[in-house]
Amino acid sequence: MRASEGLRAVAAARSVASSLGLAADDAVVLQDSNKLTLRLTPCDVLARVAPEAEHVAPFEVELAQRLAATGSPVAALDPRVKPGVHERDGFAITLWTYYEPVTPDAVTPPPDAYARALERLHHGMRTLDVAAPHFTDRVEEALRLLASRDRTPALSGEDRDLLGDTLRTLGRAVDERGGAAQQLLHGEPHPGNVLTTKDGLLFIDLETCCRGPVEFDLAHAPEDVGQHYPGMDPGLLRDCRTLVLAMVTTWRWDRDDQLPDGHRLGVEWLTQLRAALDALDADQPDAASRRAG
Image (cartoon, rainbow, N blue to C red; front, side):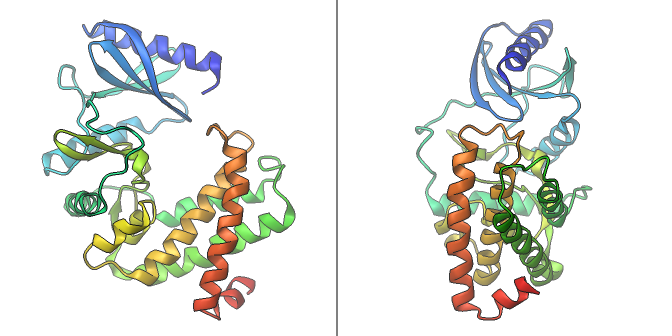
């Protein structure tokens, strides 16, 4: 969030917590992007704050409750207050349990443990009947961003074409290859959305849930995690990794992107995408002609 908006978001979160009987004398920013994640003290609650116009908090709250009931490895809402979304000063605020980390933030969980936790999450998700967007809807969002030169003014024509061709071709390929095995997914289970706690690995940020093959989720995890996930399709995972790389690279070129150092990452990831496509073309000679077509 922008600095002025962030100050208002912190004040709104503290106000909501105090009104619910939780002492919130101070706030530490844990993550700052399209929404703000705060640790409020001394009550030790995790507050997630998003602009009211952009949030999908009710969906996330309901899904977290339903997954917790299945024993899935997800972070819990704060048990001291009634579950729900609190609106204050133009922000939507949800309150969650704060988990003291048992390892430094920079330490990625062991790949076998990561894979087991994600498999458990997917198992729990298969038991739920939840309306969620398809992963191809997110591909279409990225394509619409590319089509808007006003929103992506710094992107060259060559790079725009590369991203668009990759998104269209691999979006179709993954959807077709994923077939009937598609299910509810986390959507972005990257290391930043995994907590290492005394209760094991827990997933957070469920607002990105979508439907698709499990390989789409695995594409967000470190590469060695997929080796420990039973029944994973290596070829489909490779396509998903390249597709996801094209998606996140596209978002970095949004003029309103708020990820720190996002432009540098956009440039770096374009180079990585070209290398990934070259490797894909070497293994699948018809891949380049499909993109061109």
